[in-house]
Amino acid sequence: MSTLAKSHGIRLGNLEKNVIQLMWEGDKPPGTPILIWDGICRNYGITFSACPKKDQTKERSKEHQYQCVLTRLIKVRIIKPEMIPTTSKDQNLRPNPRGHGYLYYSLTAFGRLIAEELQQPDPKAVLFLKELADLKKTLDQLRALGHIQVTADQILDVLWQQLSSQNFAGRDEFDRYWNGTKLGIMLRHCGMVKHARVGKGDRRRKYFLG
Image (tube, rainbow, N blue to C red; front, side, top):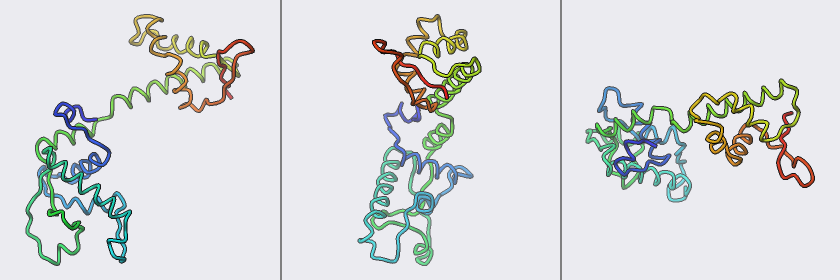
C-alpha cells in the first residue's frame, strides 16, 4: 500500500495498481498522454472476439472493472483525461469501451508521486524475505549438526543465537515476536509441513528436517 495514498484516505487495490503501473511506464516525459486501454487490453487479457460483444460476458466484466478503476483514479486525482484530436479511423484501431468517453489519460503530479512510491519495495515483503532467509539458515545449521527431527524450542534456540544482537532487547522479547503461530507459518513457507507430536502425553511438535 502506498503510504501517501493512505494518508489521503485512498485505498489502492490490485487493479488500481495495475493501471498506475502502466501509466508510470508510459509517463516519459512526465505528463505524456497515454492510450491506456491499449495497455490494459494487452497486459491484462481483455480480448474480444468477432462474436457480438453482449455475448462475451467474461470480457465485458473485466472491461467494466477497469472502466470503474479509471473513473475512481480520476476522482481521487491520480490520473486525468486528455483531449487528443484523433481521426475516426484512428479511433477504430484503439480500444475505447462504449460509454467511457476518453482514449488518453495522463498522470497528475499527485499521481506521479503515488506511482514513484509504488516502485519501492514493500517493507513488509522485504522483512518477510529476510526472516524466511534467517529461518532457512537456522534449519540448515540444524541439519549440519546431524538433526533429522527437531522441536520448535530447538529451532528457536538456534535462531536466537543468530538474531540475539538484532533489534531484540532480550530473549523474552524474541520469544514474544517468534511465537508458536509465527514459527508455524514460517516453517510452512520453508516447506516444513511434516510434523508430529513429540510423544504420548507431550503435545509439543517435532518437525522433520528431511
